[in-house]
Length: 538
Image (cartoon, rainbow, N blue to C red):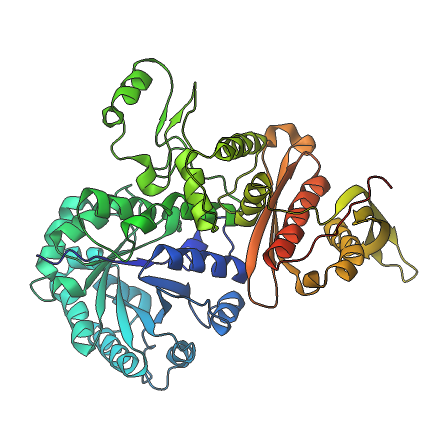
């Protein structure tokens, strides 16, 4: 096949949510969708409208995507009713997405045992549902559940199901390895057989990773002729996960010569997007992840380092910068300058590569990362730090001290309550201020007391709100004395969102650091005028 265009379909927001310990909020979903859109992923599946309150809220206020096609997921009609009168299908149409992916069974065993219906009725369900969906939305995908198992058990029926969907109007027929048991050699054979019925540019694949072959299976399917791959960021998903799009993308583009919606310039943001998703989930990024892990291009002493310094191709299969990663020499780390320059370009700072301030910022970043800071998921904190090194960020206010008190007691009604109270001492311009506020927890109280002082001085802060707050323990072996990382997401009435980070052995101190960056970022971005003079003491 001469066509080298492969389409990427991301299911992180649905399949990824089935990962043990993962629970996306609507804020998480929006942030991840926007990151995938900026990368250039062709399709972003938002979830299953009507399945749970989170998905309902997400589809009610969908993210504003520029490059990706927002997609809803659901199932074919139920047995015993028409497609037009099926409540589940009508809920999907109400989501008003341009694309819709409908799952249906293609394994005869699942049809007769799980659904308890005839094979003919199942085929009719597929036909009815796809035809109606093709009338209601611009693009329909058929998710052929358990296709590979079905093909092995009864190839004639499995092929009949997907051919029915294709003829009914499905733009893509997606062959699913739902239990993850298929191997690459089988994938090649089966995909080529399917292509005798359905063109390769209408065939997609979706592999689970139960044998550790999901990435290999996906690439084998493309080589056989399929032109869509479904998967998740970092391989998230139930059991052993799904095909990892983060590994698939650079292999397709850099190794196999295929083109995708993700261009080579976009690919340089791959590491950042991978780490951003982990940070949103409060998960430590895998150090040894292919392409994007911290250790993916790490070399420690001896012959390897010597060889890499002479010719990186000795132990590096690609240039790390191509995927936004960097070489890491454990003994003497000389890398990172190009990454800093790339991040500067992202935030609109034009600076020469030989500017001495680059070295100062690189040292600051490395020192901060050693303390536990991670800026992949906290772009606003990085920008404030960078612009401060450049001398662009004014001193909007100086904190002299803060104190937070928590009181847990029984009130007059016999109810057990906890009250948080924060006191701050701030200098704004020539004036000293002290404010006290109560809140729903210590962070809320601290935020409220800061705003009592700052909001009158800076009207720009009046529409600022905190929309998410996450804490991660960085040194779990230290128990309650562990170092904590706090990440705060903020938003304003313009719809802008940004994330900031703080690290400290004291969770309130870490929270203040993140709050401080959020306030300063808002003031700087909105062009707030700093006071002419700061008082030097209380």
